[in-house]
Amino acid sequence: MNNRHVVIVGGGVIGSAVAYFVAAHPRFQGRITVLERDPTYTHASSALSASSIRQQFSTPLNIQMSQFGITFLRELHQHLAVDGEVPELGLTEQGYLYLATAAGATTLRENHQIQKAEQVDVALLDPDALQRRFPWLNIDDLAVGSLGLSGEGWFDGYALLMAFRRKARSLGVNYIQADALGFEQGHGKVQGVRLRDGSVIPCDVAVNAAGAWARPLLTGTGFDLPVVGRRRTVFVVSSPAQTPACPLIIDPSGLWLRPEGQQWICGLPPEDDPDDAPLEADYGQFDTVWQIMANRVPAFEALRMQRAWAGYYEYNVFDQNAVIGTHPQLSNVILANGFSGHGMQHAPAAGRGIAELLVDGAYSSLDLSPLSAQRLLDGRPLLEKNVI
Image 1 (cartoon, rainbow, N blue to C red):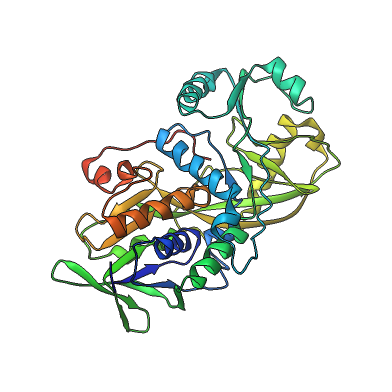
Image 2: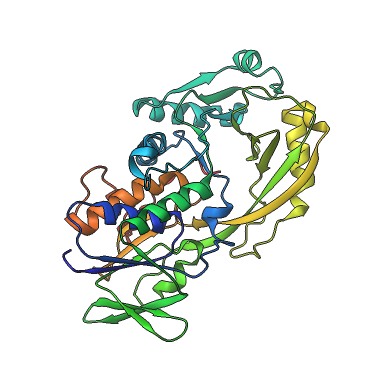
């Protein structure tokens, strides 16, 4: 990698994590440029994320990526401090609580076995145990709950993004405001990144970390990336309700909620889930959200919406898992796309893995090869059951 120029398209948390880990790699001696069309991150998924981390996945590799993620967040001072200034993420480890009715109990228990095999600190709770631990919860229709006892919670995602970016710049990474449209090809490789103004930035290696906007970049490259922008609305609500020791709750309906200071934030996957819907809050969802919340926590009958925002999941419609690794047709293009809502928590593992792939030609810390694009070409989905 001596004197090679790596161009990363997308300066969100994935692109900035890749930039940091490549720049920090002891054997990398090239140049790194990050192209970010909106340095204010107004529409970036990283800035609009609910920014949580969990171990309760159904895929062992996702669990392992989160295990590295929580360790990285806990030890952030060792990695992302600049000039003695340590980023403050407000990491809160109050766990996830997955709730299941009788219809979903078998799946929850199957996932529990996978998680325990990966040393996840998680416990299954019957309705009585749920009621004792969370007396404010309505358990009437529940069969079981799965509670993360450590290694799960939430944090300031925008602060993490800024920390990656600041550290990367301190290591010599160059951030440029530019709108990338695609790749210039020649002799079976990418020669540069084509910008909206018609100019081309030459590169030896290109990384596609463009989030919900990643698919159009690959037009004409021989690979159709099945990643689209799926809008998710986050509501901020207030209530006189008291929910002490409240984890991030996943209701059987798909609704999620968690405390945020003296308020709560919540969301619900829409019944109609179109691609690339306008990035505006879907206020029409709120009546349904309110009904579900009041059913699960009766004290939420008294509830007021304070505000709402919307962000995109970079959603992999093939199997809801990330696509990480070399482009199937272009050996000097690396993909880091389709995290389907898991990007914030998996950014450290993805960034580390891509740095190893770029510099050493192979993964050494955690084998991310099951997430390669080859599984899409082979029609072998790596399905993740626990997608929120």
